[in-house]
Length: 355
Image (cartoon, rainbow, N blue to C red; front, side, top):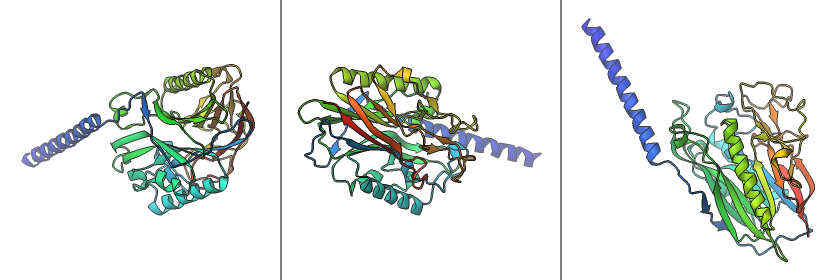
């Protein structure tokens, strides 16, 4: 009996120690929680003198780069896979490949999502600085995931994260700002979760006017109400900018299916995994439009490494753009990069500002 009593006592002590440690961690994360203001100024790096012009096509690329870790060979635990942290050599190889693609794309503007600058999951590589090394133009970065420690999944945790949106441009920008989006999560989940935002840049147009450029990455794993709240803020923001007489282009990862996408080709195969929201033309005012490459998959489910077989792989079209009525769509296509460097493919847009 004494032996049994000792075992029970030790188990109780162990449970109390673990519970106390977890409580202390939650308290620490609560105190250090990232609490951005509704609007914050963002520093613009680089030196450029070129101005946006009306009647001249702009080449824009939007790409969720998966922090350099989610290439075709990877899966991810939140999508039903097992991987939490990819090998360092693979992250380095992917970021190098992403940089070379950007250099060769001849883009005027690049809108990137899931760019790490100091994260355990990507071995604390400053990906924003690395990508900017070969970029001749300006850069702006806004954090949307900043946590001292993400205690999930246990025991191999995500750890420290600093990541966000990176906009690179060859044009003069007069101002950049971080505009906070509604946070759908409650305490304590909220304290180590994403705080999503819009990265807004204001680009003066030669001859007068302004292009409001928005880089975005909307919610993926929240309720429908959370997605709707973020979309409402985005659309209200764009409408207000257009009412000022500005041109508006918003691009990135919407985590929602675009209108015009063939549901038979991109059907949801398993509703227990990630199911994107659905964008509707009714969301936009008259004259506005969505733009995406609706025939080529823009992203894939990370429940397993990419097989290349569309019959067995869950594919989505959730990356693209919103364009204001005073712009003219020249072309848009999803580049079939075969998910070589990321679980998303780049979406290339050619657009003109009307005179």
